[in-house]
Length: 542
Image (cartoon, rainbow, N blue to C red; front, side, top):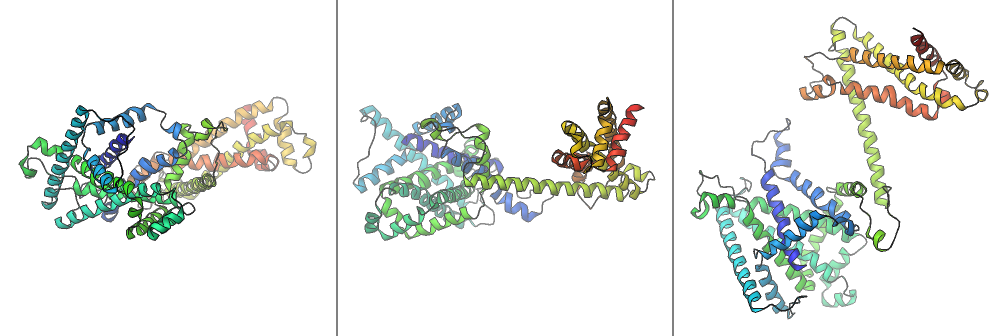
């Protein structure tokens, strides 16, 4: 388990470094016409990448893994690309210097180094210490290369930051990340110590524990801590990833171009970050948990983590976790271990219910906004004579009136058919007096084989309405509406998407939804009788 943690931590840091390297934007980036301030805030600063990584790559998985452990790791990807790969990384000896730190602090604390394995043989001890020496050599060389590059300004650090400030910031961030890593271990190490005993040892550690374990603060702290760690790791990656242009700049220490290309990958920074700002501090936190939590800065860091979680900047992880779980079929561990009934896709916790309500509101809101936008676009296109029909001489006002009459007809035809079918088994005497026009529609359509005739004629009329709507709203090639970008106009108007959404929502779905439960009222009008029922039968008769 210890080997897995060491190897996994390096892989996590490496993923962050590689992600930062692959997505680092060029200084003069131009995207979708966004202004320079926006691209600076979200892309050049790395905020967009940080949020994506934290929400999609960490918090969503952690939230579901917290109570669906059995299902979460029940796959070959976890076995081969996480478990085995982590053990392989540890076996390489790249990170073995952390074991030297562990032995030193165990000696200082007077604690034996515990192991579940048999004592090492002579050959195993030699191999172990050789890997420690190798790891120390790699770590020292990585520091030398990184510090040299920092002082020469040859890293991906923002150009506006002076080189000495970058070096100071590098060490400060490593200490801050280290404290965040050690805090987590120290808090779990003292969780079972009685409050009275903890209070006797250190009032500061007692107060910090009371703050962390109060109500749901622990979960909030862990989320905020994860956000802090990832943000700082991304900044460290930017500080330590070398940016030497091969063949143009002087290589660090005069190494070959091939070796310099390897340095530019950021692997050296990943080694430093894993050992110095993560694993070493975890060992300190586990060796001296009470002393670690007595640090006056710990209380401030806990509050910062709680504040970050409360800000909601990464709360989208809860929404993604809510729908990711049923999508992949995760079940709580109690279902398998205690025989509880499996969970369905229905919400279980109050948070799930809140998320479902929120998502429903969002769906309705954006659909309504999209509909209004589409209607405005279509009407503006017609009224400004930028359709082929109005350009050809038809008055825009007449075109608009015809269009909306077609939509109304389509709504009555779509909803009316369901009513005529749905009321077929209802005794007509129950609504003869209250809904005379409904009774007339039903009498006409259900006389002989008229229902079949009605369906045939109505279907043709629906097709005619769709074709005429498209004919009336087809835009000209030199379209210009509200100064919108060309790609927006092409997407919504030239493609016909705006007309399609308007027709589906206003001309079909709205009517069908209401007609499904208000059949008697829906067809109790002369429009349905004369312009849908009789006209459909006339079309079929032709």
